[in-house]
Amino acid sequence: MEKFYECWERYMEAINACPHHGFDTWLLVSYFYDGMSSSMKQLLKTMCGGDFMSKIRRKLWIS
Image (cartoon, rainbow, N blue to C red; front, side, top):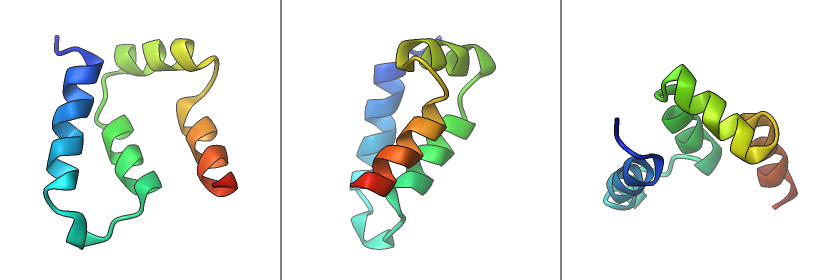
């Protein structure tokens, strides 16, 4: 299984290659999260101390 950071780095390389597409950050993170396996989502939930997508939405609204 690919490590989280390896997958994230590859994803960000692809995103950074096409900055002119103008997608919102929250949407790009959502696409990445939706593509994760359920076990990876559970690991991320544990690492974040709660639902990752709820946390990222709150942070993006504050920023």
